[in-house]
Amino acid sequence: MTRRLPFTEMLAAAWQKNNSLLCVGLDPDPAKFPAHLKGRAEGDNSPIFEFCAAIVDATADLACAFKPQIAYFAARRAEDQLEALIAHIHEKHPGIPVILDAKRGDIGSTAEQYAVEAFERFRADAVTVNPYMGRDSVEPWLAWPDKGVILLCRTSNPGGSDLQFLDVGGEKLYERVARLAAKDWNSSGQIGLVVGATFPAEIARVREIVGDLPLLVPGIGAQGGDIEATVKAGQTADGSGLMINSSRAILYAGRDENFAAAARRVAEETRDAINRYR
Image (cartoon, rainbow, N blue to C red; front, side, top):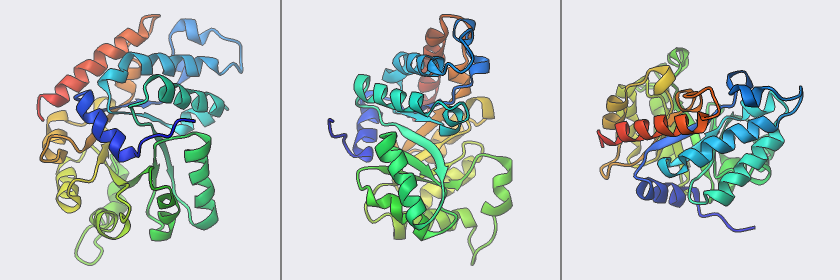
């Protein structure tokens, strides 16, 4: 098995090589697939791989990362398709990192097993982790020094403000998470943060706190986040630092046999729109 580069090195190289801050989210919903993939026997999960692999192959030169969402595979007993998809990305597009969007959050030996799942079973280059159980829910992931650990910080959903805006000793909770992630927990340099595009002022605040840490930014496209505001708030001094995720707008841009070409067109438009503000 060929050894993968550390996540942070892969990401930096992909930013530069593909001139892209676009992360393509892979959230396969068979109900939205083109008709020729829908018409399979009940229980046949192979269209999930075929659909996602076609999207990957059509957009790999436009993206800085791919982000499969584990629930879309697990809900359909298609974890084997997820394994095959990540293996396909590693083989065909080895310079593009894969972020497993799992949002795991647990402690001790359970967190250690989740890390084995993400990094050994699925061979992801990075994973999203919920840090709101504290430092000991993050530490088991840091035992994999070449892997990215991307912590939820300021999420894009409206209800995120219910807790993340609470005052904790003169700062908001999401600010405390950002500060801990950047200053106390990131001894191995592998941590990134999730900050939603729906809150550009908070993106700017997180960037102020964490310096050049990579930020995974969901919420453009179907969720309505503003690309210009996102880029201006979150980019680093060299015009990088962001993985701006788009999923549904790219995946379901086309509904016929040319769906991959339609996905490529929207991905290219999105990449170029992001680059206009860098």
